[in-house]
Length: 192
Image (cartoon, rainbow, N blue to C red; front, side, top):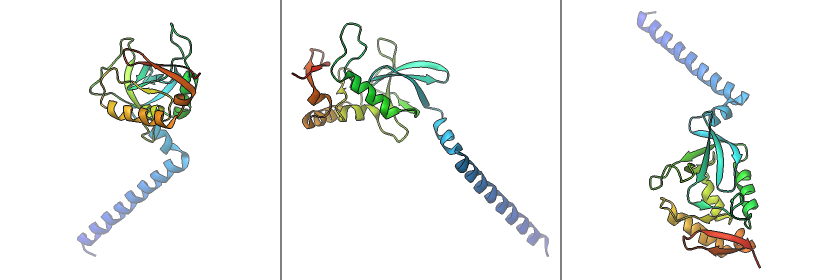
């Protein structure tokens, strides 16, 4: 056998060894559940440590807690210092909690919006692991309003979701009386 043949044989066995190690590693992670751990511990995914209300959550960002106000959605109030709990406020808060559950979320800033609001809260879109946009779900299912008082890139989409939910009588649109203030903010009272 020539040196060339021996060299090819050696490379072939090294290649077989590398492929077997790769396959074994894949199945070791898959069978032990590490695949899920790897997916949820990626940079940019954050755990929710508190559900403040339907449109505000507190997340753990690498050991530091940050209050996140969702961009483009406004749910009925549950913790406003000057107002009572609004119609569908508790339902909206519970719906947000149910959608997120214990899974981690991905946050995304909007290029047209500021980084923080006047209360110091981070302004972000909130995505679930399956890429569901939480704000869209809240508006589409009638748990919140499109909050278009400040500019953001999805304002036209969110307004359309609100109109569809309103036309279908979803959620707060059938359970509450909605009043609109001068600054286009919406508030709810129980339906008469």
